[in-house]
Structures are given as structure tokens and as C-alpha cells.
Image (cartoon, rainbow, N blue to C red; front, side):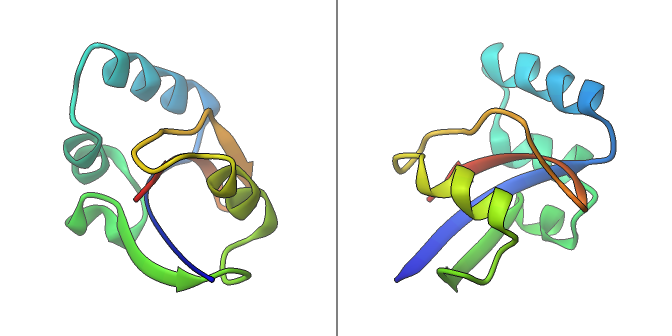
Length: 88
């Protein structure tokens, strides 16, 4: 099973909460990823491309699998930091 997602990675939960507010105000996920994400995928608007099930850390994948295409997750904590995930 192949999955596809984009994400925004930040160090602190308060940063993720601030980004959630910006998304609710209508800001673009891609633009926020370019401006704030710590992941190298930020250059592509947070796009992680396609990857096989089992490739991402369990908390990330569990959150992703609960989303419908286009939906954005709540804040997901992993060993890398705090993520907002959008299923593609």
C-alpha cells in the first residue's frame, strides 16, 4: 500500500498550535510548510511524495491513516518534533 502526504515539522507544540490557527484563517498548508517546517521537504511545500506503508514512524503513520485525502491532522508528536500532516 502506497501513501502520500505533506507535513509541517516544528520543534515545539506551541508552534504547531500557532500554525493550526493560521490554517483555520485560510493560510495555505504549502506556504506554511515552506515558511516554517524544519524538514527538508519544506522546499516542496512539505510534500513527502509517495512512500510504502511502514516507512514512517508509527505515530505519524497512524495519524495519516486516519485522514481522508485533503484532510489535515491534529498535532502529532514524534521523536522528530511536532507535525501537522495532510493526506494527499
